[in-house]
Amino acid sequence: MLSNGIKYLEENQVSDAKIDANLLLEYVLDVNKVYIIINGNEELTKEQIDKYMELIRLRADKKPLQYIIGHQEFMGLDFIVNKNVLIPRQDTEVLVLEAINCIEGNNIINILEIGTGSGCIPISICENCKEVIATTVDISDKAIEIAKKNAIANEVSDRITFIQSNLLSNVDKDIEYELFISNPPYIKKDDINDLMIEVKDHEPINALDGGKDGLYFYREISKQVKDFATKKSYILYEVGHNQSIEVKNILEDYGYTDIEIIKDLAGINRVVKGVYRPL
Image 1 (tube, rainbow, N blue to C red):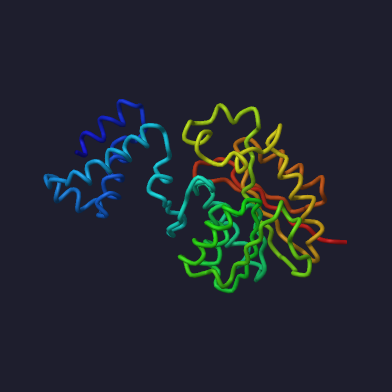
Image 2 (image 1 turned 180 degrees about the vertical axis):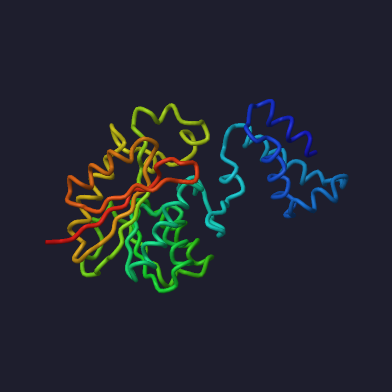
């Protein structure tokens, strides 16, 4: 049955066909890879075969594997995902690690994240920084619902406040946030149709579309944060390929200083960090 799944995915030009076929079989049988290897000749029931081939066909239609099985690992934690949230990606771990370094190096307690999606960023930060109190916002109530479930599952829900908000419009200004963090939509509107089918046809467009030049949310967030920063505060952005200099310039235009660009493990500029000091 596994070989049939691999062959079907390969015929439909699914990358990593063997890996995906194995993972889907593990999911259907609720077993791990070792079990599959040891019991490779075990016969499946008709119900198991039908379920497996149903999922194989979904993957062949380019539905992301993570949406099929409903989970994705990030920073060593498990996250529920569905069509209402972006799939957490390893690139974003660079942003989280830089946030953790910033928090630990500056004794930061209150943080505000913009665009929570699955909640992978604030949840991972709270898991690693036990004193942090996080507030996180998203315009999508369905995304907030998933993020809340993930916070409960990862046992940090008591330290995260979730707010449905268009950027910072519904955020309380009375809290003195010391770190603002975001992985905003940054794909140019005209480039969305050029993305992989798995992305453009399945992941939420409002979490991808960064406007005409891909920089809309960097400008808006940088501008709005200034109304909330009552003392020296840090801002951290994940940026798209070739956007780091433009985002650095945006921060400078809005009065941020000490701007740094941090590379990922592949040497690509992935995170832009700045400091805002209110007058």
